[in-house]
Amino acid sequence: MCHYSHMKRYLEDYILSDLPKKIVLLSGPRQTGKTTLSKGLYTSFDYYNYDVDTDRFRLQQKAWDRAQQLVIFDELYKMKLWKRWLKGVYDTEKNPPYLLVTGSARLNTFRKVGDSLAGRYFSYRLHPIDLKEAHHYFSDDDEANFAKLMSCGGFPEPFFQNDTTYYQRWARSHIDVILRQDLIDMFAVRDIRAIETLVLLLKQRVGSCVSYANLARDLERDANTVKRWLEILEELYIIFRVIPYSKNISRSLLKEPKYYFYDIAQTQQENGARLENLVASALLKELHFIEDTTGAVTNLHYLRTKEGKELDFLICINNIPKCLIEVKSSDEKPSAAFNYFMRYFPNIKAIQLVKNLPREATYPNGLQVRALVKWLVKLNLTDD
Image 1 (cartoon, one colour):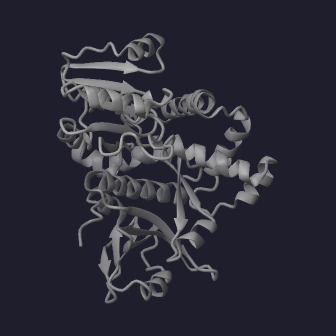
Image 2 (cartoon, rainbow, N blue to C red; image 1 turned 30 degrees about the vertical axis):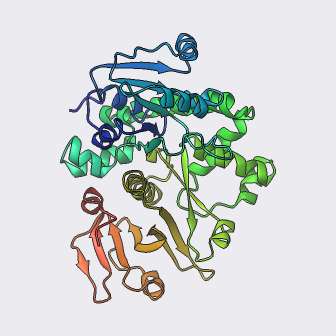
Image 3 (cartoon, rainbow, N blue to C red; image 1 turned 135 degrees about the horizontal axis):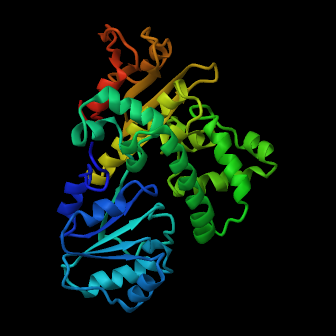
């Protein structure tokens, strides 16, 4: 068994390559392993957490050890005007020490007009473990990895414990810390119980179109308040949003989105919805990896017509539709929606992923029916 406190993660080599050139910003959900990764990059480092009083004082004094190879600033985005402060440090001091900033909220959340760090940083987003990372870094028993992800999620601590009771206890404290600390500290939100209810409602609606008006009615709040709460939950890396594809982007933003959890085991429906969440999380992780390492623009959408024809995912890279994906537990018969949508996307890849698949197949129109676990282990969205 790999101990989660001593493991290499998929972003490590890329961050090491960038640190001598730029400030590196590393964000991602709480307890994804950002601090563990950061402290494992060099044997010589200095670490400061802005949530700790003594560390906060020393940061204000700029009193870290310049003899170290690396200085890690954790949760620095909670400092007022943190980007201006960091720019001053970077512009007046020479590397090393290299500068690595980590945070459990999106580090562009508090961006104002203009960006004082422009041209001075590269950013990365660290996701939970998925099938691809588990196979390449921890274990090649893909079915066992799949079972662990479905029951305990991909956050390192519960993933390696592989115990559902342990996961349930971990998950409860994980959400509590985010809602009762980060929400209050960063967004001055006080209506915690209503947001806890919102999270519970979303767990029941994973993979379904979400109506702001319906959520507002269930919560007895106005729709704009609920929409803002959803944006905050996104900024804190609890959920992510998938919007329907439209050539008119403004139109697509007005249509009902779907929401998925970074912690896939949060999904209450254990079969179809959780399986779809697992695929959505793997696709988003790969797309963020492509963006962060190549600078490409990526988007994850779904497709749906007014008549109800629907496919789970459409992947776009640099605004070019690349791949259509439908997720099934056992149904190897191709979805009829492929024939409809493939007419609008010439030469696009079309893949139906099936968890329990007796035999893979490729059809004359190019549609591929693939074993879900095997395909996700080898996931490569840039391969033409």
